[in-house]
Length: 400
Ligand code: C5P
Image (cartoon, rainbow, N blue to C red):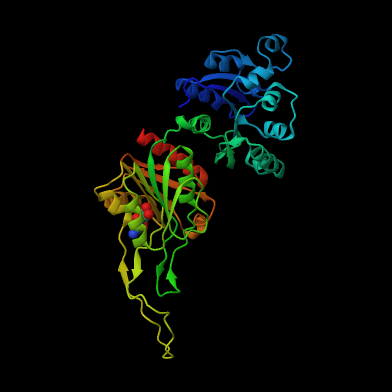
């Protein structure tokens, strides 16, 4: 994915700097050429000696080093890379670039470059949440800087939990690959079907039965798969978030319409069924709007079971190589989801607890457990976008 690419890694001063060492290894084992710049603060956490041993190159630390300036120079350093990665990107480095400050080598290189920049922020959750950092983040994004993370989790230095933990080296590698080259996208040439959103099951021409699914997770997934180069067919019920751009959108309303749309979209390399499909539809649907008849008696609705789209696809002739289901549960999540995986015949189940107290349904975050034949893997709570990116990466690995 990143073979023969020249990556300039700027290491900022934070405890997550130790992960930059692993990042160098991961990039180099994939054939990238990595050159490193370290800030003065970074050198308080890891030494240029260890970084240089891993990059097998000179490590640049000083804007005013006459030898370095003569041999390479900060402008060449900034321009000779295919991509600049800042990991960890501290609040200080973000603030410097957002303001256009260039008082040290790292910030001067960032200001002088004409190449894409990817930042992997890492800082204390309060620093990340501070209005100043929020402003800088928004400004940098508007200036075209890409970001990976931060993730939620426990902070190495304080044990505090929250958003601010640097993305893992492999996630950064995936983001690097996605940024570098369209042809290098691991899902290029793959067709992936994603279902999303709720379904609406009519009671009569004006009323329907629905559920609280917003379609946010399915939408994020479709976007993440698209970003890795997949051609995505996005079959969506009436969701409350708009579908992503750059995918083929098929809008449906009922479960039966969704099944038909899914079957029409096959064959595909993978199917990810994130829709919250209604289990039942109203069997005695009114052809006209139901009226009160003055008797005080409420009409009795009768239900019929909807087709199980996931099971139908998993057991069907045109079964994609990888079928992923979701399981929204409110109790004994792993047990129910493990049984569901076997019953429905899919490869993976992404299980989550949607009890109202979790705030997950309709919220921006998700806490999932990935269940496969290998067992249950508990993921920390993180943004739905981040769940999507990780899942897309795993799908890319499974289809590789
Ligand atoms: O059985 P349950 O609704 O909990 O299973 C959830 C998974 O099954 C999701 O992946 C959902 O998209 C899928 N499903 C389906 N068709 C149904 C019900 C659920 O594809 N009728």
